Image (tube, rainbow, N blue to C red; front, side):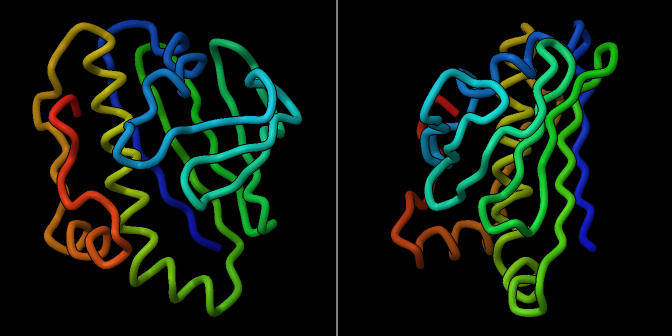
Length: 152
């Protein structure tokens, strides 16, 4: 099992940011879209990553299950802290892809999301996320933007 956790203290109640995940989703990572309004049963994702909303408590948490059946990711709020947690039950091939490529892209994407949430909370991140040379290289090799849009 793989567990990957990112947290950010936003300095304001974090629940509203769970509900604004689509609005604040970093555009460099592909628009987050669903087949219906965000809620249990909504199918969608961003870019090639597909998932379904399996749990949603407005202002508290939202959980998505990967369409591949290999895990979940949850965005939750507790006080002023916003947490993203990925739990992966990957097969050996997916585990290798995770270790070499996906983990790095995932971490960069989630840190960009948390930066966007912090900015929406009214403050600039103390240490804004930066893409590593590896993330830029992998994105370039997949034909994605090599740099963030100016607004991110």
